Image 1 (cartoon, one colour):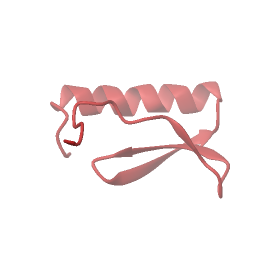
Image 2 (spheres, helix red, strand yellow):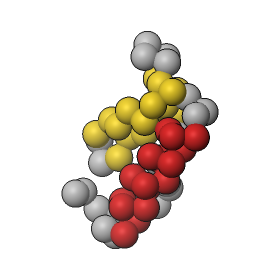
Image 3 (cartoon, helix red, strand yellow):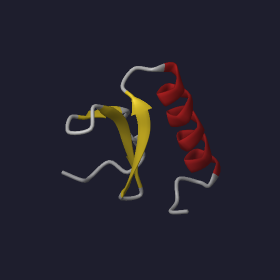
Image 4 (spheres, rainbow, N blue to C red):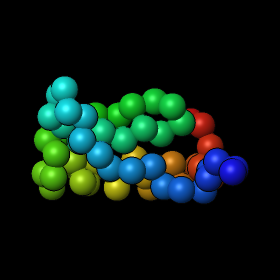
Length: 58
């Protein structure tokens, strides 16, 4: 089965640090405390930049 490349990276919990994390182009980005408004804003910013760059490596 082919790997889906069009999916948006997920907002998830990094259990060891207790923080939200997203992996974009193989690089992990810590976003702040899980489910906080600041972490969701940072996630939206990173995903927006990633989409604006055409879903390519930066």
